[in-house]
Structure formats: C-alpha cells, structure tokens
Image 1 (cartoon, rainbow, N blue to C red):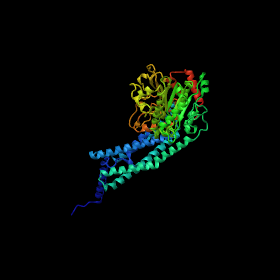
Image 2 (cartoon, one colour):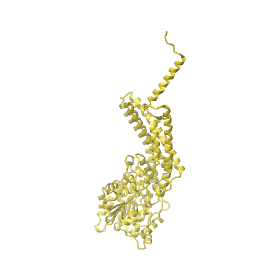
Image 3 (tube, one colour):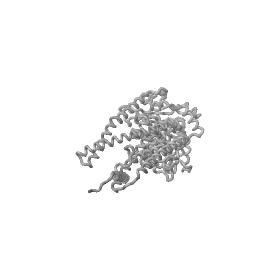
Image 4 (spheres, rainbow, N blue to C red):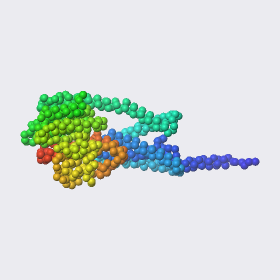
Length: 588
C-alpha cells in the first residue's frame, strides 16, 4: 500500500508552499517590469518631481507672485517626473540585461516606503518654509513686496494642479502612441511602426495647436494691438510747434502716428520749460516720428522720418538722437528728455513705429522686426547725414531701452562698427540675446563679471549696474581716461529682461556662477530647465520694481547721458532735471 498523508501533514505542506511562494516573490523584487510604482505612476518620477518642486521654490531675481509660483512649480515637477521616469525605465532595462536581483523582506519594504514618504513630506514642508523666508529677504534687496503667505500657498497648490494636468496629458499621449504603434505594427516592421506613430502624433499635435490655439491667439493679439494703436489719448493733443511731427506743416498727420507715436511728439519739455530748469535760454527741441501705415514698409517709413528731419532743419542741431522704439512704438521718454534738458534743446530725436504689438507680445512673437527697423532707420539717417558738409553735421547719438536697445543695436555689425558710426550711445536694459551685447561681453577683461564687464579698460565702452559706476569698474578699479565716442550699457543685476535666455535650460550662465549682483539674493542657483522658467516668470514682474532694480531705470538715465555727452551740467543740475522729468511724467 502507498504511504498515507495525514491532514496535519497536508496543511504543513501547503503552508510551506505558500511561504516559498512569498519568499520567491520577495527574491524576485528585482526592478523587473516597470520598477516601483505609486498608484500606477513611476515612483522614481514622482520622487524627482517632488524634489524639483523644492528647487522651483528657491529664490530667483524678484519676489514671485502666486501665478509665477504656480507656473514654476508645475513645469518643474513635470520635468522632474519625466527625467525620473526615463531613469527608472533605463535602470529596469539594465537590470534585465545584468539579471540584477534586489531581495527585500516585505515587512522591511513597508517600513522603508513609509519612512521615504515621511522624508519627502518633511522635505517639502522645510523647503516651503525656507522659500517663504527667502522671499521676505528678497523683498528687502529689490524693494518689491513679496506676495502674502496665503497667495504663495495657493500658487503652490495650483502648481501641483498644473503638474497633474500635464501628467494626465502626457499619459494620454503615451497611451495613444502605444495604441497607434500596435496598429501600425500589423503593417510595418517593429522598427518602423514606432517612428511612424511618433510622426503622426507630433504632426497631429502641431496641426491642432496651430489651428486651435496658436493661430487664434496670435490673431487675437494682433487684432487687439491694432485697435489699441488707433485709440486716441485722453490727455494728449497734437503739438502746435512746427518742430514736431503731427504739428503744423508736418508730412506725418497726427492721426497716422499711432498711440505711442502721438505720446512721443506730444510729451516732453518745450523751450520755456527747459529754460526754467536750466536758468539759461533754450531752443525748441525737435522730435520727428513716422507711424506704421498700410502699404509702407520699414524702409519707406524710415525715409518718411528723414523727410521730417529735412522739414524741421534738424541737421542744424548739435545732436541728433536715433531712438529705436519698443513694439508698438514706445520710446523711453527719460532718454529723450535727458538729452533735451542737457543740451538746452539744441537737439533732435528721430524714431518710428514698426509694429502694433505691445512690448511684452513683441518680446515673444517678434524678434526680427526691431532689428530690421533699427537698421532701416539708422541707414536712412546716416545716408542723409553723409550728404551734408562735414562741418555742418550733427553729432549722431543712438539709444534704446529693452527691445528698443536690441533693435537699435541691430544697425551695427560689430563693436568697432558701433564706435565708428556714433558720437555716443546709451543702451538700457539690453536683452541678453542681443548679438552686439554678446560680442562685447565675450571680449570682456578676464576677472570682470558678466553683469558689468570691462571692455578695453573703459576707453570707450562702459557697462554699469548703477550710475555710480560710470567712473570706475564694478569692483572700484580705475578706468583709462574716457575717450569719445562714449557708449554706456546700463543694466541691473536684478533685471530678468537682460538675463533671461534659452540657454538657461541647459547651461549655467556666468552671472549666476559669479553671484556678485548687489541686489540679487545669495540663494539664486542654476538648475537645468528650472532656472529658465524662474527667470522667465520674473520678466512680467520686472516693471513692478522701483527705479534702480528690475527693469526700472527712469531717473538713472539722466546722469548716464550727461556722462556720454561729456558732463555738460553739474550734479545739482542733474538732480533738477530728474525732478522736472518726474513731475511731468505721464502714463504710457
């Protein structure tokens, strides 16, 4: 007879088999499959996403608003999740090839997971507290009030929501790609199908994005900008002086100048105001301007400006400023008035409109228009200037702020070309993507910081972060005697318009590595992807800063132009001019 097995023995055998299966399962926790997951999501991806949120909360150039916090956190977490997920999947593939096995007792696994989540939660809380304290410290540096704690907390919550939305969108796209790949693999080889699926999805996304999102938004922006351009100012009227475009005898009618052009020719001091401030007789300043018209390209618009210069006999003035505007035609009033007061009105300024877009939209949508306009205007003026007798030519000045600085510098192919053509120039808040600016910075003296590079020991060109640095470098070192022509780049270390660039995604800039800005928080550090969005979200807030910080320069321009012109007035007169311009300043 065969051996008999008792019920107890059978139970023990089943129990042993179950223990064996559990042990086998523990032994096979080898990162096979998709690795550790949380609710079906990549555990490594979620961990890195949370860590990136800590980085996103670190300080940037200016205190962040709630929506800026939301955008930075959401996009940074999405980037972290993507990198973490890819790293996890790569490790899974490597472990399969190398047959790596990690054995963890289930009881230890639960404890480790709990401890890990506790560490992450504690790290998140700590990063949030530190971030809020850094925002308070930052507001002291740049004199910009930080958003209240509740607003920043709401921004953090919204940032997590943005991350969840992006994660859901990415998951849907991935599922669509897998479904498409499976269908195509029935027709094409397993190597061809994934590429075709990718091409189809990308093409569909681009087509839908262009037709449903991008084109309607862009068209709406242009339509709105054109309407604003035609809207008359309630506090401005056509000039009564023949020395201004839009006035009596002008070839450019008042209603063709656009809103910003009307502001240019309407604002600014007349001879009597200049005389009152200076205490000496003054001339009537000349301001010419040409608006953007249908059927008139940039070259024709520039020629219209030259005709206005001829009409007003601007060539007989001592100085002629060629000022490149921003977007819809905005020209920095502080620069125009500085020269008018400093020269006793013995000057003329020429500018033109090249777009309907406001500065913010032009900054994103139009990088070619400003440079083309700057070149067209300078070329037309210089050609007419060359036709004059050498002893009857005005001194040519160049200037612009922000996108106007970028556009104005588009007229010059190199640093030497600039010095060969101008008698003086002031470039304010120059965007870091400006080619001429980049050439100067690349040629800076070794050891000088990117925020205030020393060029040829200051013989002609000086970069400053404050007017106090006009006569010495950033560290207080002496310059060579200042020769003519004189060129000044005025740029704040805390101005995101200057320092934001696509390279922030993958490359640490010198100014971050050097960390020498006097109004920049010590905690500003570079991180791939994150820094690009942090500084980018600072750009809209740059105009909220007071003068001397961010993208607000205003009164600082007066002593800078005074230095470029050769210090025609003393410090007391500079102060009076600053007060006079500020008292008559109108919203633009």
